[in-house]
Length: 241
Ligand SMILES: Nc1ncnc2c1ncn2[C@@H]1O[C@H](COP(=O)(O)OP(=O)(O)OP(=O)(O)O)[C@@H](O)[C@H]1O
Ligand SMILES: [Mg+2]
Image (tube, rainbow, N blue to C red; front, side, top):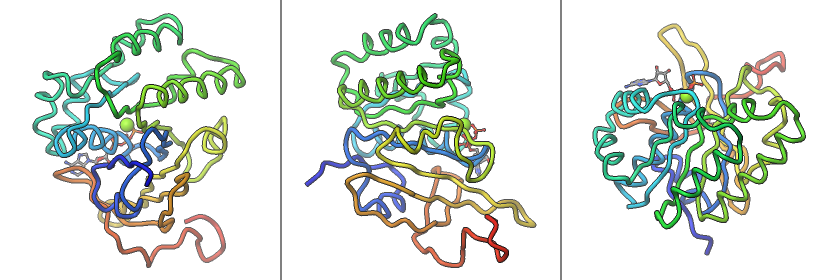
């Protein structure tokens, strides 16, 4: 049977029939504030806490203090200790943006990873590729290379993809060519706040439930509820929402 890596979000692991295929790259998309980063933090945090698997968090947008703050805001109280012990490696924007070229970024990462026993990586977010490449084709080429390198190093990855609209074509159609899996986080406004949902649209080599499931963010991070129903992607006039 295909080896699987648990996401650390129990409801989601059930939807995935166990987790993500080991060494897979999963594109995680959603609008701002939908929970993409928290999902990434949870993947790494629970990876260490429950499954004894070490992980890497690469951020091009935040400092390690911001990242720790986000982790602690959802009750990942041992985050700082995990980082201290090297069970979670954080590459924050100060470290990453210091590198001149993409290849230098990768080389620095690989040097560090060598023999470190890391199993999980979160890249928050792929917008970083915009920083290094203007040309679409070049960007795609390097993105594919990058994904290959992650696989070769035995890393299961979450690649976070920022999204402006709810279901847009992303600029370079990442989901169409890049990854082994696609997970979307969705929020819709309500009178009192937002309703949150998660949708696993694709997971290569796996039998998955492709319904949209409700979820919440709170203490302990993301909770996914395995009751679908009551939610349709299409409005009555056929428009999305
Ligand atoms: N302790 C908490 N309880 C409830 N909700 C929380 C808590 N901490 C954070 N949130 C919510 O989580 C959301 C932030 O999630 P996150 O930072 O993962 O979003 P994101 O998709 O990464 O956004 P961006 O694209 O801006 O980076 C916010 O909407 C915030 O309200
Ligand atoms: Mg984020």
